[in-house]
Length: 143
Image (cartoon, rainbow, N blue to C red; front, side, top):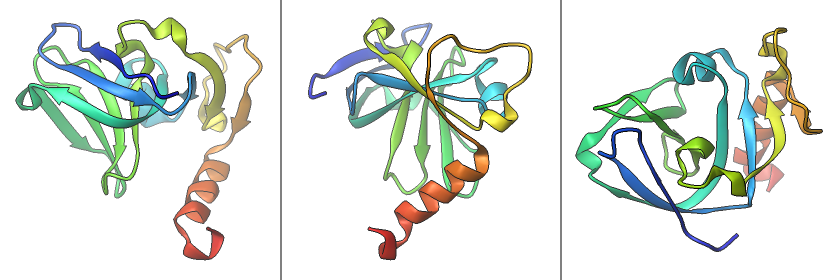
């Protein structure tokens, strides 16, 4: 997907444009994402994120490798990104038109609460599978 899309936070203090990698979104069920968003994190992998009013952004380093980016004024959860800058996922719901993204995947399904499920057929990975996948991606022997 080479089209730039725009989005922002609830109060309008932060606006952004980004180039989604695909017209797809994935859901993270991990306990950190659920606490951060108050639900699940509906993530869209993005390239070339351009921000307006970066001073309004807060950054929380939630692990040794990841950061959560939010609006300091209204608290909107906006991005999860690798601390080294190698990957950014934007909140699908922060885009002006989130309907362009199809739900295709779910991760950390072993942490998903039993009281809800999504109707779409998706690829599903446990936390261990996600960590193994990303560890292999970072290992030069695995390309």
